[in-house]
Image 1: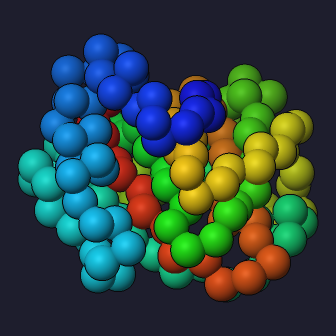
Image 2: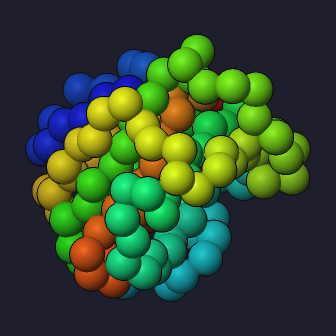
Length: 148
């Protein structure tokens, strides 16, 4: 898991061969103007999911993990809290191939919570359980999905 300022995003380009293209998209796109839903970048290798999250608490935010994609999560319209828990601390989840996600029961809490402002991003790898979109207000966010 990585948490940093968007000003430093380019420093992470070497993590994955697809990251330079994902970073270019993030830094050269008006993220707030993107429509909700899937936005194509490079087919199934890199795409952006834009969503609106309703207010929810830590207890209401399910922990999730992915196998095929790395998430680069960016809050757009409000600051956000994101939960984190190492995958090895989670029981085996009910993984669904079609959504590339294992969701854990609502009420299961992460071990750590991160404050992510609109000038920041969080990167979650397949070994990182995360509980996103914890917010007291409606939130628009972008999740750039990068194939592992």
